[in-house]
Length: 301
Image (cartoon, rainbow, N blue to C red; front, side, top):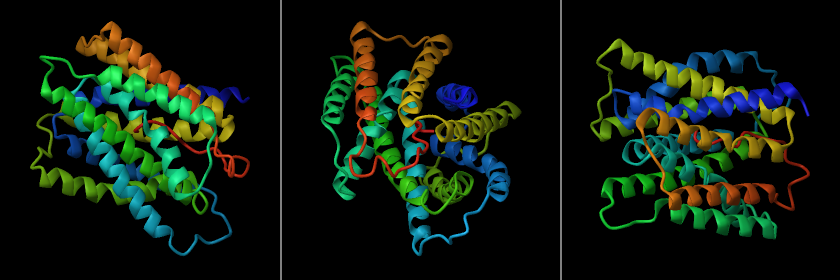
C-alpha cells in the first residue's frame, strides 16, 4: 500500500465532503452553480489532459457517443444533487447520493451481463433499508424535504449511469482527457438546464464568485484529481471504503455550519446505509474483476 495514495484519497474525499457547504453558500441556482463549478475547472483540466501520456492505440470508433452520454448523465447528476442539497439536509442529500454503487452494479448486471456475488444483494438490501429509515416520511414533515430526498436518489441513479459510461471510456482515454471531455460535454447541458428553469445565473457579489471558484477548485479539480490518483495506487476495496469518509464529513459539516441534526432513527438509517454500501462494494463482478483496472468511484462529485 502506498502512503501517498492513501493520503491523496483521504484528502480528496474530505474536499468533496465539503462540496455541499459551497452549494448552500452559492448565490445562484442549483444548475447554474454546477455550471460554474465545471466552467472554472476547464482550463486546469485542459492542462492536465495536455500533459497526460497518450496511448499509442487510437480510441475506438464510437468513443464520442459514450463521452456525450457521460456528459449528459454528469450534468443531470450535479443538477439533481445540488437541488437535493437545498431542499433536504446535507446529510440526507449526501448519503442518498452514495447509493450510486448499487445502481452501477445493477446496470452492469443488466446491460453488461456481469454476475455479482451474494454479498452484493445482502449489501443492497441493508443499504435500501437504511435509506428508507433515513428518509422515511412522517406526519408534519416538510414536503420540500421529501422532494429533496427524491432528488438525492435521482442523483445516485444519474451518477451510476455516468460511472458506467466512464468504465467504457477508460478503455480508450486517460483520466485527464476523460474528465476534460465529460466536463466539456456537461457544461452546455447545465447552462441549458439553468436557463430552462429560469435560475439566477450571475452572482451579485465578489463573495458569490469566490464561492463558485472555491467549489470548482476544491471539489472538481483537487477532490476528483486526488481521488483519481489514489485509485491508481491503492486496492479498489480499500479505496471504496475510504471514500465513505465523504458522507461522514458532509454530515458533520451540516451539523457544524447549519445546525442540522439527525434523530436516532435517521442515525441508525445512515449507519445501515454505509454498512450496506461497504458490503455491496466488496462484491466484484465475477467475469471482469481480474481484468478491470481500478477507477474513480467517488460520490457526486
